[in-house]
Image (tube, rainbow, N blue to C red):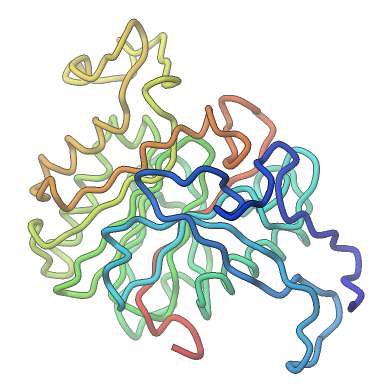
Length: 308
């Protein structure tokens, strides 16, 4: 076994289900496909190709609808299979949480290798409405993380990554025009209709038609836990139809409604239906843990890897 330097590997979170015939997830999810990638463990020393050293089991989820397209790569990673420790155990994808930079970089390599990407594009997310646009042949847009909450591209050069811990990552794909997008949408994003704005930019900047666009809403804060005591101050009046009980809102249905209003076909919208606050064994949750990491949702066009 090769020396891995100062990086200790955590194949699974201490509170997660044991590895079984159904994988690290235990009982399979009804709405998503559970998969596991075998990734060489990060090492401080270069390893020969003939012996990559120990392998990490890195679990991830996929949406059944998006998985039908061979030209598309996507994955919703969990908090399992990385190298971070303590509150950030273990596949933390964010530098802005207090985690060690070296470990975050190692985790991002694991994520990049897991999806087969040459590069990962990510943002300094700030719950705003800024959208980054990158066209085929122009990678400079994603070279340095910019403040934004959504990315759109028709280029296979980079996979688009959103970091989350209760907020939604919403993946978009237009198979006709070969355009992808990834949006970070929390309650502020819903209040500003970020998802509708993403669809508008896909139409105006890339010639997409709403009926061709697929969207997938990932694991995030569910109606069971989305409590907003000050909702009269922060939400528009129209959101009251999404109250499930006093102070609790169905943000998933708000996002779905906004996508339908933008012109998407209901059959093209997938919903994970997994609450991150309820499943801290698999996902980071700011509401449940406060000091915690961020898990990654990634989408890319095939050709993103050196061997594609």
